[in-house]
Image (cartoon, rainbow, N blue to C red; front, side, top):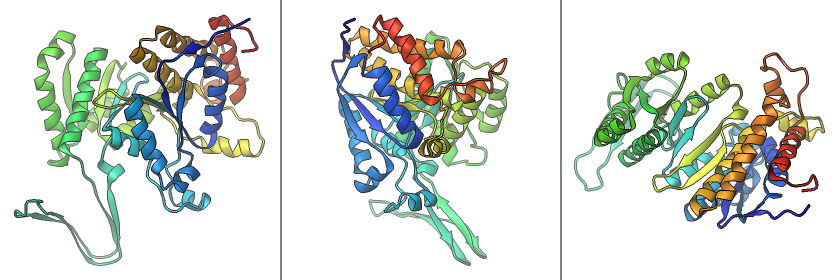
Length: 395
């Protein structure tokens, strides 16, 4: 049976990654995407050794490519700690590619399992500076105005012995972009908006977020009323308690680290980290899609030993479908949007009919004795997709 692949008008920026997700990435592209879609992929290999070889320039180039083409899809990558530096013989512990790309795009991360998480994508602990204190002495924080005006100095701590210290920062413009992106998303999805932090303790830093959100929401009051949605601010401990007993249906805006932790917590409650994707949205409408989990290191080491693995590829598949659907939407190619929908349906139906990876077999009701291998799960989805697309098994 002859089959004409769906033609995409413009490229997608493709960013390959590390370890087991790199193996999955190749399988998804080979079995589920390229047989059906004729698309030019602007490829950037963010494999850790390649980032090291290029002094991380490859990551910067990938971010600039997303700005140029508007849509990117990214595989999970390693953010190296000291052990990884040694393991890969790196020049230095390179920063998180996700953090670098977020900063360049000035984007906000949205993760949507049951409750949508809006994660601020700049600053805080991901852009901190740290110091190990060797002994007694004072640590001070100083602001020196660029115009030569009087500065400010505050005492951080008067150490009586060894210790550690770190400094975090954020910018008013980035906080405001974050608030506006969350408001736009809440209005588009018609979901109530929450924002939570700890301004009772951090009366300047956290309070700055609270105040900016209030200003931006007040400026869109009429839009909130028209959409029939509300905004509320809560202390983060109160918000966490309420989330745990909530049925969802709202957007929870959080600072960078809080969003990182809480989105993983919600994903685990949803069933598996392998079922949650992440989309980075810039204020000017650039989109980057990826799985919300890491590189599945343990499974990768099993793979290297030649042992069978059962790694859930759903989030990676949905990262591809998100990017393809957005490309089709932006380019006016409805057939590409429809393909992405059919691929998602194929994945969901495969799971619902009992072909699942080990992580889902263990939590199924009733529990399933058997589970698919990494490759077997992807091939089962491919079989359903071929039927939906009306093509033969040879495609």
